[in-house]
Image 1 (cartoon, rainbow, N blue to C red):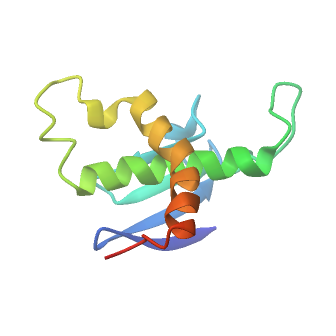
Image 2: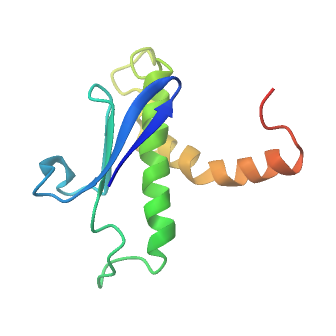
Length: 117
């Protein structure tokens, strides 16, 4: 699967690949390559195993949202301008918080009709 998405005016490609096709997927569910403008997710992310969570569809969506947040932070200039080598904009907990809470925020924003200008 290859899909094109636009993040703050920059085109990214979203790929679903296996470890053989993309060795950087070893030991991770996905990654964002800021310079290549690619987001890559493991193809076996929705395959049930003894160690997997029960709701794999939700998990896959969470991982995709997480990597998209990385791309948004990079395209916003926050990766380079976070004023430390341990940039908050690359902090996995911060990125997870945004990715996990965004659907809840969006629901409230829609209920209040405050999405957009």
